[in-house]
Image (cartoon, rainbow, N blue to C red; front, side, top):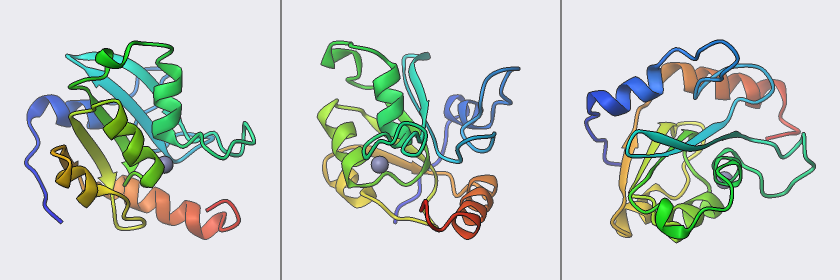
Length: 149
Ligand SMILES: [Zn+2]
């Protein structure tokens, strides 16, 4: 897997301390997996895994971020960046390609490796942070709630 250097803008988005009432990319209560789609410094949508809360088969963090961005034209996502706690699964990888997201920033891919090679093959930029906090939280989640994993 290729790893990319982060520019300061991306780094600050991932590591920015959440404001009161907001949730960071990693951690927080309710869900360990978060997603955020942003373009030109504007957050289009934030989300977190809602499969249990909504009884949904499809509301992964990335899908939730897209869902919460509302009904935007496809062009709104073109060139955007998807930030996600964990490597995106095949479904979320496909959604990023469908909406022409330019870059996917992954918190960690040790607990799960998704469609990163496919994204690269489709000309997308993949940034793997190998973030310690994301890894530890996912390990904890998998260990404590294997039935939900
Ligand atoms: Zn997914």
